[in-house]
Amino acid sequence: MPSLKDIRKRIASVKNTQKITRAMKLVSAAKLRRAQDAMNELRPYAAKHRELLGSLVSQLSGDGEAPHPLLQQRETVKTVAVLALSSDRGMCGGFNSGIQKQVAAYVAQRKAEGVEDVQVFTLGRRVGLFAAKNEAKVGYAYAHGFGEIIAATREEDIMRGMTERLVDGFLDGAFDEVVVLFNVFKNAITQVPTVRPLLPVAAEGDAGAGDDEAAADLIYEPNQASLLGYIVPRYVEVQVRQSVLESVAGEHAARMNAMNAATDNASEMIRTLTLQANRARQAAITTELTEIISGVESMN
Amino acid sequence: MAEKMTLEVVTPTGKVVKVETASVTAPGSLGELGILPDHRPALIQLGGGAIKYDGGQVFVRGGVAEVRPGGVLVLADRAARPDQVDRAEVEALLKQTLEALQSRDYLNDVRLADLSNDRAFAEAVLHVAGH
Image 1 (cartoon, rainbow over the protein chains, first blue to last red):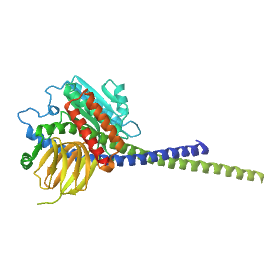
Image 2: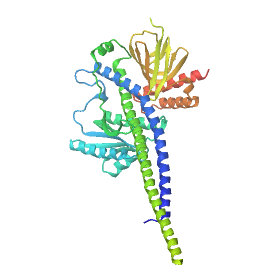
Image 3: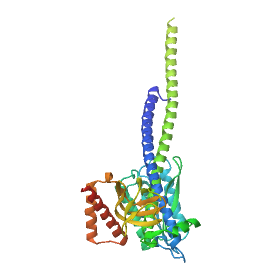
Image 4: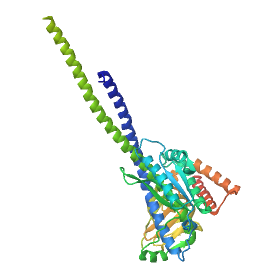
């Protein structure tokens, strides 16, 4: 049985830990709000791009030939690039381990399908370390991730650089397919590791009949093909950006939940320890009393 | 005939302006163009420069403008209101852009278009700030 002093020491230490986890939870909550704002700001821009892309593609495509090289499906897929997003730091529950498992599973799956080479590109330190340790072929790993992505130009450049690298690789024929693997931000409680195709760009050219008529009546300046050439690369960038923002929001949400659980656990532990401490104190008092009483009795 | 229309400028990092205006002047990729209310629907590629509207302007670095019934929606790569630009930053951008344009190494069409958009953007900003 631990002494009363030991138990009190442990209570103090658990209380300190609880203070830290509570602070981390509050910080994550604030960061989550910012990340969600950034996601919401991107949404109208992304939605409009998707719509324009869909309408241009449906007008320009015909006879099987894709109207833009980034839209072209390759007949045989030999190499695949995977862009995996994670956080830089831990303490966020299953956020990173989920991604790591997905990366391993996805690489194995594509290899089983007969893809010769799967290259993993990583953003975020956790998945970078993981990919380096496992035999997954690492295309490129950015050492730092995106904990503070929002509105920072340095991160913007990294994101652009990464997108450019993937797009160039696709156009050169270095990859036949590019996918992004990241945690989809469902809500503050659920994040799901998901694989989303990035290249070739999948455009839903399924605009309604009425829309088509309206679209045909549009004036295009300079012309449809050139506009498509402008929009497609932007669209790819937007897709990457959206994935990154979702991943960042997911990271903060996951950390917030993990820290919330940790704070609750600490409370529970403090309760149990306090009970133990009280019991030990009682026992000590009882012993002392017994000693005094028996001492007095022996004097009589 | 409607006398006013809405001008909305959206970037990946949020909305920059949303105003009611009687006319819009925008830097199209083929040249400056004016848009009045009830313009025929159009999709226009933009270069860099200033989008002017009643009582104000915003600077954009490339984008697409969609003219639709009721107004104009601009999807800009980047955009800034006059009160949001940092003169020193823009000067640095202009210098950098001009150097890149002069060096002539690795310039594909897209890169070249981006650079000239940046240049037009920077020049528009400095032109206004110089007054």
